[in-house]
Structures are given as C-alpha cells and as structure tokens.
Length: 270
Ligand SMILES: [Zn+2]
Image (cartoon, rainbow, N blue to C red; front, side):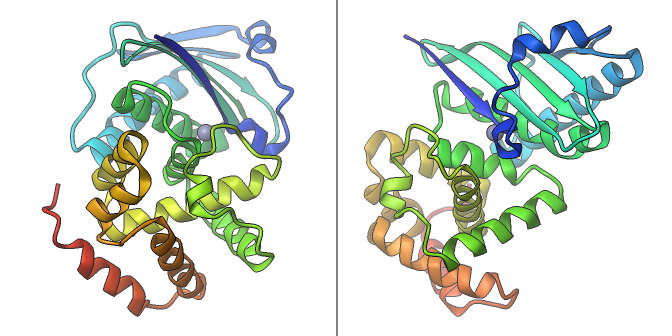
C-alpha cells in the first residue's frame, strides 16, 4: 500500500497556494546532518535549521515515545524560504507496508518564527508518521503537533478554541475523530484539535494519547475512550472536554478533571 498525505500548517496563515515547487529556486545553500538535509538561502540559515531540526527530532521523540528514533536511512529534505512574515510549513509523507517510505518538508517565514514554531510542528508530524506508519487522524496530527509550538502559538490556539466554543462552532467529537479532510473552518478545526489533544494529554500523558489514537483508529473510538480514559464513550468524553474547557479557559483548577483523572488511573502508567 502506498498512501500520501500532506500536513499543512501554511493553511493556518492563508498561504495554501504556496506550493513546494515554488521554493527550490529561492534556495542557495545546503547543510546536512544525520537525519536532515536543508536547503536555504544562506549557509548560516541552512545550518541553524538543520541543527534545530535534529534537536527537535530527539526531544520530541522522547516526549511522545519515551525514546529517541533510530536514524533514518535517508535524510529528510527541508526547504527553507525566509520571508518577513509568520511561519508555516508543509510535510508530505509516502507510506509503504506500514512504514514511512519517503518524506519531505518545507518551511517559510521569519527565521525566529520558523525555529520556534513551524519547525517543531513539522518535525512532530515526522515522529507521528514513524509511530503510525500511515496517516494519523487529522485532528490528532494537527492538534498534537501544535503542542510542540511556542507559548505564543499555543495561547493563540487556546483563544481560537474559546471563540469556537462561545459561538458553538465545535464539531461533536464523534465526528471530529472521523474527519479525513480539512473542513472549511480551518482555524476552528486546528483550535478544537489542539484543545482536545491538550485535554487528553493533561489527563493521561503523551504516550497514552498516541495509544488512544491508534486504538481508536483500529478498534473504534468508544472502546478506546473506555480503555484509555475510563469514560464510557465518546459522548461522555465530549462532555468532559467541554466542562474542562470552561474551567481551563478561566485558568483555575477543575474538579471534573480531577474526577476523570481518578477514573483513568486504573490503567498502568506507560
Ligand atoms: Zn501540521
């Protein structure tokens, strides 16, 4: 089987028309590390991005998988375009027989924003692709990758989630979990995916979140919700998320969250 998916953070900034093919003509230098080969306008930028990508790869893999990833046999190419604006990125993957068969990444924006936000986000997609060996549900892939971005971006997505819930624009989780394409309200989709990912991770940590998503995909979301979070089904999870969100958005402790934590403590720690 060969599947290809594109992860697209550029869309968040309304740059969906920027294609990977536009970028190579703008590059002028290359820097190679163990797992990345970066093309950028200058040697300094290429080196900074490659070294930061290696740091992100190791740090983020340990956060999510509890271990470093083995070295890739082929380095992941990263094309860098420096602009004066906010940062975004695209990573595309090919999968073959449950493994990543090829991957490539492009990032653009101001260098400081690329290093703090777009690059960690895109590298997180590569960690998830390696773990899943196939496309990860979009809400989880994007929502959890946002957790790797800097505080400014995380707070911005917290606010998007607050606005989304205030105008009752959120998807029922039973629908969100099954969405295979990006909806027209892309900002809301990223904000909701980020918020529910944050909620699940605060309840049970990152490795459990990945197991939940994998089991949800393979065995159904109600069963995965019971197994990993001690809640009866996705509807109950949806209610728990809403009540957590109400309190979390005010920045105070949440008794419902404590209850949910207690229920999920029956599962052994990863
Ligand atoms: Zn993304």
